[in-house]
Length: 184
Image (cartoon, rainbow, N blue to C red; front, side, top):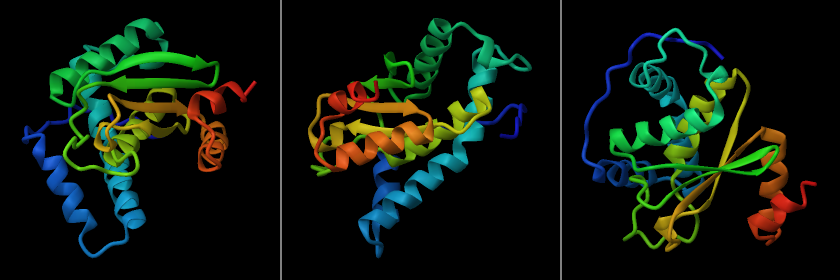
């Protein structure tokens, strides 16, 4: 991953803009294509969020990978809350899988009545941002979403191979907590 450590100006938009963006991406596209476009948009914006987080956290020029995990995850949650996206809480589910949870995530549209988790911009953005922190590919998979009536949004975070295995288990109908336990 390329480290672009210049300050990134951030825009302030109403949270409803995310719903409008999803609707615009969905127009004339199959749902899978719209979700892919939203994830790509998030992924492509990851560098800007990474740079802004580094500046906001006072870590410009410092390697975020060496910040103690409890401080890093707390600061990341505070950053997103400060930016208006909502708070994020970190939990380590397995040595190779973590989860970020939010009861107030801005991308979730509680009036949407979605059948599937739909914070696609977030999954792409977190994938890129966290990959830049550790200079490795990171996969993010949303397994609970307020847009489909869940009480919170929950994003699994891990290596691509591990999350691919989890995704296949989920597609087969295995609850994500059981699929994580099966990782060994």
